Image (cartoon, rainbow, N blue to C red; front, side):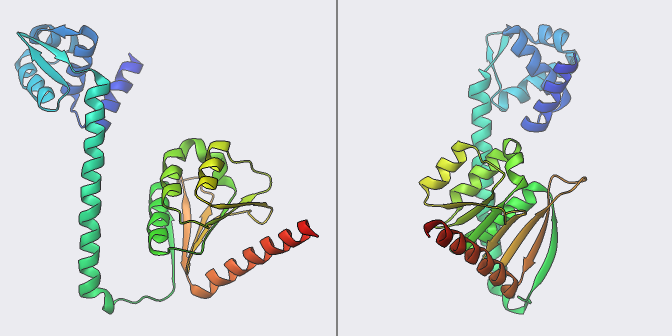
Length: 255
């Protein structure tokens, strides 16, 4: 019963179903094909509501009517359609937000201060989305130092794959010498001509993109806490120090 309640909760959260819809859908999946009254009995949805609930599930593409009975569309087919709909809607919203950003920038951008900034970003998605945005605006000189993030790859793999997709060629990634990233990620990075180095200087999770610096910090209350620093001299100093270290290490290895 606990597992069933968990499934119902996930249906509500991911598919946008209400409680009656989730219970009726799960009952149809169990029964294979059944009449509305049978679905009502198994699901616990009141008879006075079952027809409206089934109509709603039909409109969502999760079930279909076969004679006097209702049957579920195969879950992989129905939910894949919903998943791709989410992607299409997200892409449309992304374009609309970017168009709004361009419009606001053209109208009001000249009135805004573009000087140095220091901000705290709370949350993994918020931190990674900021990193993606900064990479998009900085087409070169992108540097990462990676330490603790490697331990969380299993939890954030989808986000990291998206990040890898937008990395420009010749991005430099310095990995802590005591960490070993999974081979699948190493191969993806090398296939994009990303430069990988192992070094003890990678003691923080950090990204430098032009005059922007993101520094990941440990947190007991958030999945991620990131310090965002927009400061040209600071970014240049970090970049210079990292590149000097890489060059020194390279020369030492060749001598």
